[in-house]
Length: 320
Image (cartoon, rainbow, N blue to C red; front, side, top):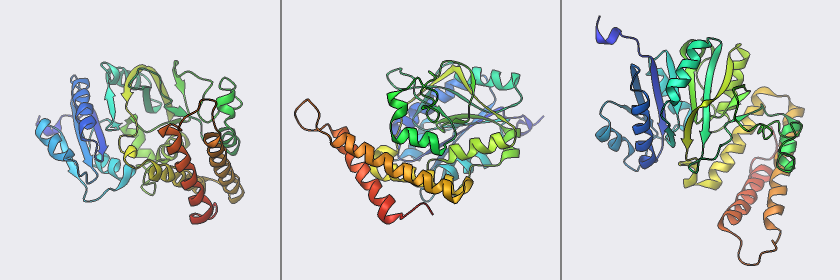
């Protein structure tokens, strides 16, 4: 049997844009985690200017680097990697994720025992060890309104108010979920062949909601596995331009609603977006008891909400 004829078990795909240092850490963790599998790792670089592809090629000659001539966004970059992969499973990993020991072993074992599962996600931890929200419910007008009014923060244990971010659930049990957020997925190839690739009309954000919805529509389970863990540093690319990327997130969410919902529902959702930004703006503008200058985080959130409201009400001009 030729080497080329041996089936690749897991193909790991990483889309990267200007995240060199954390990308190299991600790759070190992946190489260690994939050791017992016949695997391949593909990095798709979105025209980074920080030397990411050269650094990867020097440090990990076994990793295949595909270079885009411009920043094609999350969905197109990952699809490029998927098209160039051959594994029975495809593992999509953000460049700012560190895979913990045993994570992929446990995820692979679960998928082998549960052939109805098309997509699997691990427990995601922050750098400080805290559990990050990595699952959510499909967006509805009601749960978007609860988010806008911060009802899910005021009553985090009430399922009635926490349906979008699943605030009532501590991410500590095996669970079939609507959406696994897109920082770390293990995908069954046979499910992928049926569902199709990520929707490339989404540049960044909301493609995870769209993809999970399509997995459900084709009858595949989407499952959260708490026994597998990875660390997510979060926002390595978006931190470079936080206001712009925040607006991009709202643009993508509106795009999702245009794809799946009626005009009245889109109008209602648009109104919740405007309300959300007004409530956040007022909250961060209200003087606190503690005197002194506002924190840099509050100032950023004020600027972010102002920019988003301007975009929603003037530039975007309605839900379309």
